[in-house]
Length: 136
Image (cartoon, rainbow, N blue to C red; front, side):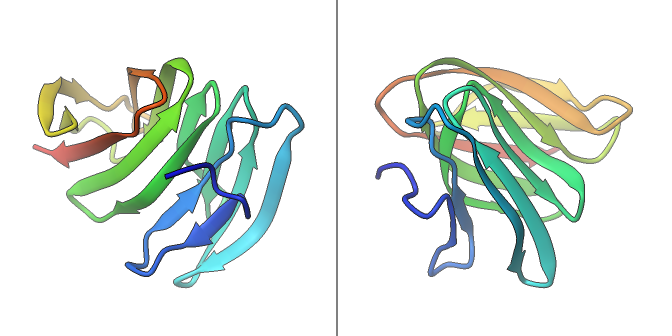
């Protein structure tokens, strides 16, 4: 897989792929419609931030490319690639414990904050990592 040339796109399985960590100039996509929701994307080498209907959905610092991003009430899944250590912030349900899996390995659990933010770090390299966050 590689960066997303069009910045954000819908995949055949109805998931989203987005982000470009190779560019230093900000790429902004506003009002991307998908399944009745409005997404706003900002991406470059320093940050990738996706909002859904005006609220944060996911943010990576530094920027990254995410493939096949999908979520439902219990599960968030995506593949991610980038450079170096990245902090990932997801906005989920407040005060809920989630298990985090990277490449099918349980790396632990974490409880979202009162705001619903779940924050964790990954070491990104040229390999794509599969991430799954499961509500306990």
